[in-house]
Amino acid sequence: MAGLPRRGREVVANLHPQKATQSYPKGIVGRAGWHMADTACPVGRDTYRAALRGVDTALAAAGTVMGGERAAYALCRPAGHHADADTAAGHCFLNNSAIAAQALRARHERVAILDIDVHHGNGTQEIFYERPDVLTVSIHASPESFYPFYVGYAHETGRGAGEGFNLNIALPQGQGDEEWLAAIATALERVREFDPGALVLALGLDAHENDPLKGLSVTTECFGRAAALIAGAGLPTVMVQEGGYLSDDLTRNIHAFLGGWMDAA
Ligand SMILES: [Zn+2]
Image (cartoon, rainbow, N blue to C red):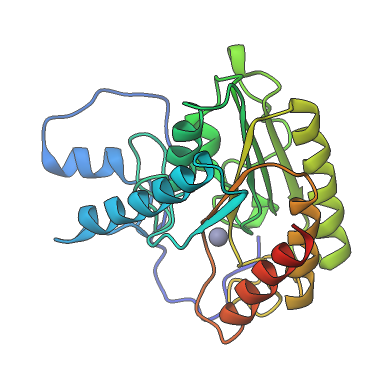
């Protein structure tokens, strides 16, 4: 295992894999650890209110689509796809995409979630892992050496009634446009076969080549092509903003994506 560049002298784990379920403690310190999977989700005075506003935004978009609009974009902050039903993780507290999908279930028997953030949508996968009514598909940089590390592998396909309703497409780190578009095409094939009434698109923009985390190497122009592909599925779609770290390209990427969508839809 290679050492980290610019490392310090001590090893302090930044995240901890969830162990087999132990006992739920009474103390606040134990409970904080229980509900926070890593150190990237500090809770401050306004965190809960901010997370609720993120959920409100996703629900407003879901409502718009249930009202008959073909698509809506929810600019949610904080993002949500690393959070499961009772665990915050990776800058996520409440899972906006999962909550939007559950809201859409009021109208549609089957809903699909396609997550194109460069990180595996582990919280979303966990929430629906045993359910056959919500298909979860995630395209991401391989977790072998990339967050969330412990999940996001191809062998995770669902459990019990949910067996076969989770698809992980993990790409080697650094891959670019053609591999990413091919993965999206494969994902859309699975979505079509599932035949959902609506789609939630967990729209991370951090697969971009200049994203500081360097998971994949997708160009700005490719976000437009990806949008056209996904729009081509012809499904009512709720787009929920997930990751996308501060870089000068962030605005250009969302512009390329939404522009590509509008040209194609
Ligand atoms: Zn991400």
